[in-house]
Image 1 (cartoon, helix red, strand yellow):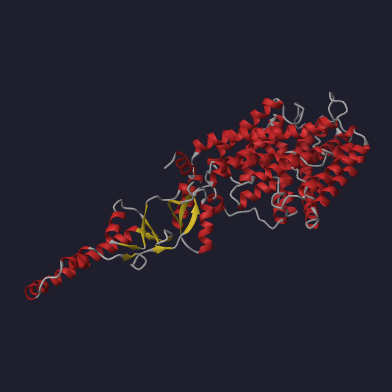
Image 2: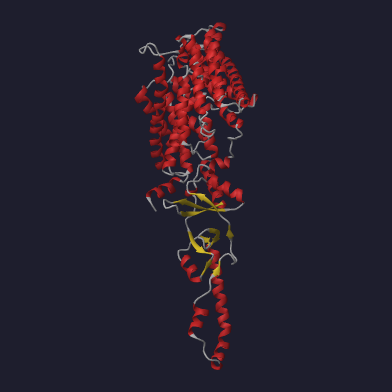
Length: 614
């Protein structure tokens, strides 16, 4: 067995931490690098738009005609390019990652990532109301998936590498490594397992290091250092902030879904052109809606925006993002939700300061909590939002009001409005479900290579006792029965075959004992037979049909060496059988069988894994 084969078999287990840690570290470096390249690609366009190359560029100071034409033409160009691809290739973003995790064991096609890089970058460069974090998550996840597919790792390891790429992407974009880990586990992996934690942590750290090498150690947002609750009388006001954030998040999810369903049959170029034109028209009066808008967010965190600017920016970004996301522009919603949350928090802080000047905290304090609350409510990711809040502010005092507001916002969305997260809703609109049973959640984290038994041997369905004796010499547990075309047709318990041979030998001994006296008398009366006849009848035994003897035989289904226990379980369920043989196609295009996995093995492994977790 080759070294790479031994590596695959080891990674198929539940606890291959050391190897996954090394691969996760490498994945984090490459995923962080892909996000850095994407950021340079999108930001280079802003240099082209700027008239003064030294002062940079912002849409607020651009000419009105430029603000109208840039997103309109950009939407048309993006749509015309996307129109050339088939619908499967056009699927990009976080929802695409979740779809591939739920239905394809984390295998992300590289061509979709290429479309995301160039077309997503062009979308952001043209000033659309989308974020770069969603495309960054896709690129990071696709990097991890590509590494796993390239070296043909088991699917459970590929799923972990997708989580590693996601964590590195979040960490590289926001300079928040802990939030990257929690986001990957909470949103993409949807599980908290020790086997995943360590490689994902290493990937997130390496992504943050890569980002700091190129962009410095400052986080994405310029958060004021002195932030704290001025009075406990503010806690009801944070409850109100959470409640309103939940309402805004629910409306955002509902309206985006409505636009998506209404425009489902429209041509792609028409949808993107309408989206770009809508952004341009809104930007005529509210230029803050264009692009990522982090400069406006930073201004709100420092309390530099008037109440009217905060309210208009919130309304404009809300409408523009609904249109862009609903009409399938290839960009993210994570950035826009942070923008809207900052504006909403700024509005609440501004009003609170006017009504209760003696008890209200700094306006930027409400803006940063509003960012975390709205993001959490839209994505249904409360732990990731809390970790981001802590890392962005480096202030543990913000956790108390942040937890209060975030929990209320999430409950309003899930309990009051009965809405699923934005990405779950997006998948549901395409006829797919994201939820899986707890059992399958465990099974998809374990590869068949880590559970299968290799105590097997092979026999033809017509085999002689001598061939059977040789096959049973090493005391295998299972026998794979093949036909004349070398195809596996059945699985037999080896002990049943051994028992059959013993019983047959005993039966022959009894027959010989009975026939011995009669044979002695016949020798005197009859001439001896030819030696050849004696050899043919007694020494050379007849072949035994293994499909006819009384034994425990089972039908099998073939399962690839890369598969998870979830895949094996699903295949057995579809065929209503209880066993599978594990194989891999070699470089010579031959089928090489590695072992056997049964339904009982899967059940035992699930019980053991649950016991370990509990």
